[in-house]
Image 1: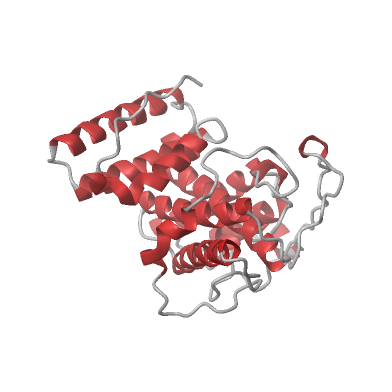
Image 2: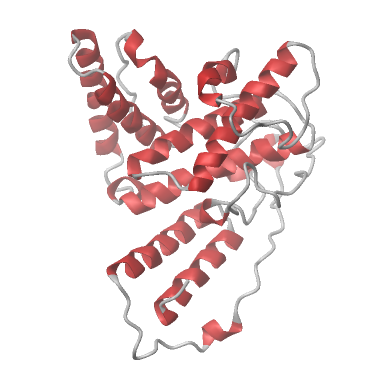
Length: 306
């Protein structure tokens, strides 16, 4: 895709969005949709912070130019033209990044790219707010990911061995105050592919993407404890991971809509969202998540219940 015009120096008032803009830059080639929404979030947040100071106004004007250029380049992409598709795409990407880091953490594999993945996942959950309020699950995942990035970074910096998994976090721990610590000394450029580098296309399939993250936990309690080691396998020889397809409710095959079922506009919107989540999951070849979401859509449309 065409190069993106550079931005002027970041005004001090916009310090809180600097990492979101860096994430956008890192994803310009990897995932332009993610890059676009990171910039949109930065634009919306910057407007709320300061849109009157000359240096801020100049910065926001240039950022707007970037957004318009990206939107033109991605004009035929449904993730840009349809919010529900964009939301599904961004949430799937953020949560898969979270799960990559969580799997590495639970397996005791502590490294800079895992820390970066935790922190970037938290930034991308910030970005999801361009579509509206976050779910309680996403709020918890954001706080956990940001805390983990800070905690593991500080442990490695001090020569200590981090504790794996969701151990030690306190509910009143204000992670937001330490968000810069989680990004300190992290790589600012995409790393070269390796067995421990996050790449959505190389992620093992799981049933935890998108809306399948179970509620009530900072990190999913049933996240697999480990991901397979790829010893001796380079990034371009990764083998397809066998997928476990969820059992399909046999009653759905013979279900017909009841005559007295009255679906509300909200029901149709939810069914559409399930279908869009399924489509987004298929972009990552995540059959399990796609099947589960399609079943939910079919049940809602035929019974009026979820």
